[in-house]
Length: 149
Image (cartoon, rainbow, N blue to C red):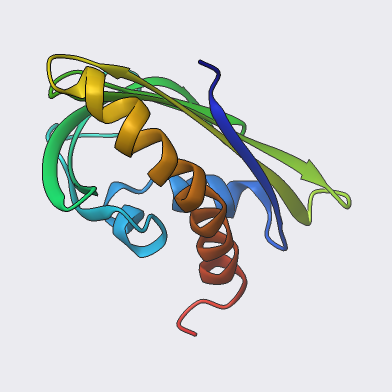
């Protein structure tokens, strides 16, 4: 199956967008299924950094470890799940426009199921993400354009 992909325009500089979307602690602010997120590695974020994320998947909360696979500020980032029955592959891009004052943000998500995840991915996870990703991007836009609002 192909990745689920959404794009939103944000009235913020690419650097500000990138810093926000790659800040682990902020994930639950703009990702509806994220219950919590914490970095597992000290030091600066980069390829190989691991993050523990707990997400609502259907009616359950499932913890999973994600690893940064791409880190190219302020242009693109990537992550992949390394454990659990549902392993996401995420690719994000931030493209400047309006002379660098605004940003096109594109996020693509795909999944690999392991064990019971082979059933969860097509029946629960993909439909949930198809509905959630546009809402997440709208939340991202709102948080960046109206901080504290």
